[in-house]
Image (cartoon, rainbow, N blue to C red; front, side, top):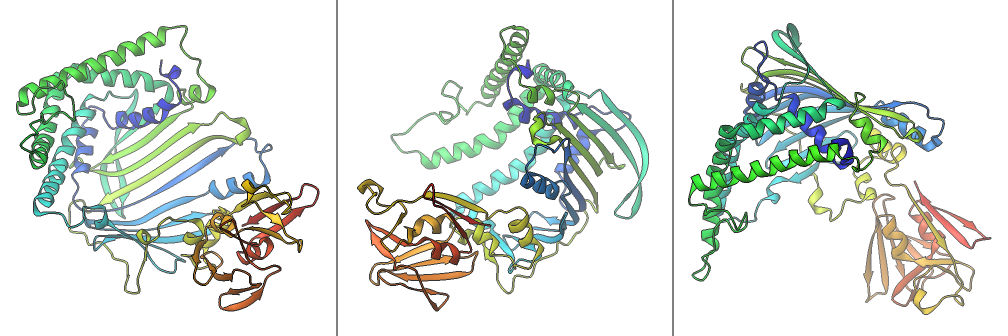
Length: 531
């Protein structure tokens, strides 16, 4: 039946597949559910790991040269996290490096002083995000206290939620347990290792068992709803009281379900939502069976069919110590691709991690920001050019972004007219003037290249600031002279103001912004490109 629902289910089911993976009942003393709950409660830790995405190529004969070039860059890309230090929630540091065909780019990440700071080798300054800006500005004492209560209660609730779902997840077919000795941060440890494999053609059966287990777990589901009640309802009631007025005596549960009993009665509330969940899950399973048996169900496309076949696989090794703490994880997720023209027959994601010093004193490293940072919140929109300008042009990071990934590449095609051809409604169209110079609206090209444009009506001047070319250009209406980084440069024709838009010579402004212009006389068209 799932194969007939559509591609939108696939991503969701793969997430559920991961939940199923970690939801096995204890086998040979290996209790993954308990280990995962322990992981969710970790306060401090030292860790390391890596992440790699491989493109499994087939025949690349149908690919363009550009597609082959990009595939060659991406197929060997890997991120190593060499040192992760979690001191507490407000102090975290990560050291690592991005490796690709062109070399290695080291980076550091730190949570410090209520900021997320990122330093990438080659960046002119560390990049920062103000984490406190996501919170309410100048909160009242009552609001701050309520937020803190919610945060703490939500943390306490997390293990219970994890436990419920994992206890109801079924065991996969391919599950073996063994005792091993492995190196964890250069220290040999005796561990229990679970090797688990799940394939795409097993997802439907596992999900059915999972939902049926939830339906059968009356005690567990009611306990979970009760715990959710204890966390959320008091806070909701407090919030409603602060918003209430003498003429507003509405039920506190009106925003959740107008038919539900009053939240003042926990027993009735738990019973109501338990029944609702039972009805929804029961209907979903019945519909599932009916659609799966119906000959009129929609036909499955090849890609969806492949995802639910044995070509999709999730293989993992999970190693735990005697305290039921996960110390090492190796995971490999393979997804097939059926589009032959892509030149790719599949993608494979590989993740590895190991942990030590769990809940022991750990000191996170910091990043030196004494010379300032680039505050990303100060940038209204993160344009490609402005982002590239954060890096030294000789750095590997700049080369990867601009030359290899070409994130700033632009290509614009325009048709040109003469002034006589222009209709009043086309007053902002590019045209060729009486001097046979192609003119175009300044904002048209500047904004497509990501430059900032400012107009000074008093001086009849327009200023362009382009971070990528590192140029500031000032032009005055009626003048052939433009000031580029303080130096006067002559244009082929003067800038003009036409129907509220500033027109400038097309070749001049394009080349000043490091672009190229090519004309096609037959079609009276022009192509503007910037790499």
